[in-house]
Image (cartoon, rainbow, N blue to C red; front, side):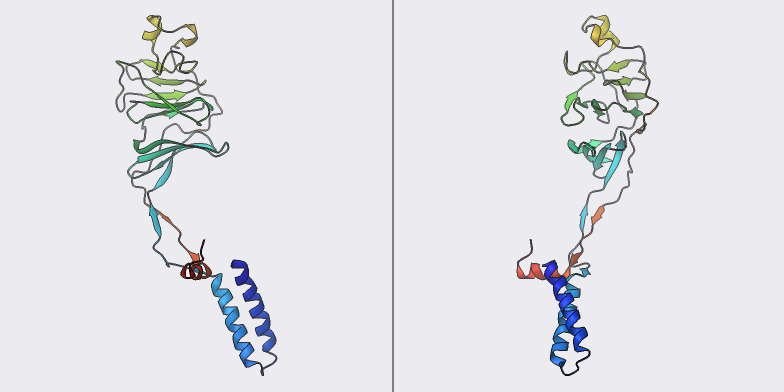
Length: 246
């Protein structure tokens, strides 16, 4: 239909130009002029024909690198959370609703191993395949870290490390899921619950010098609604009236 509109515009314009030099063809001149105007109108944008669609605000709350990031859709920094890798075309919904942003220091240079904590560290969404699938792990029985109890959360060497304010260092299993779905501490090591491959270091391993990700999640608490544009060509409106629109 758009092609037809352009053809009508072209034909109408040509015929109208020709009839300008032949005044006796008044009827043809008027018809060609109307055809030209109809073609122009058909491909011209018409605003405010329908109410614009308003959706919840969406914002990037954390960026691992230039291609990978966490997207939050919702109000007051709470809502749906997605892990997205534009380069690898990975889109995974971590939370369908009501997830809040983790506010403590958080660095994540690891690539295939993804570790995304809930705001209160009650659970940690973990992936070992670059974000294509996730499982939830926890700090373990008897361990609890509330808001502002974790001075540092780093994910490096395909392992998550959480340093609590009391000096306790939590580390995820390596290999992932070998013993269970809990974070490990020195206490597990002393009790010989874990093998030598699960040794807990004394400190968090250093972050690579070429790390370009963020040091903390960021969120605009007062982010506004997103208004989607709703402009349609007049021809599309005609199609809607005729019932032929796609």
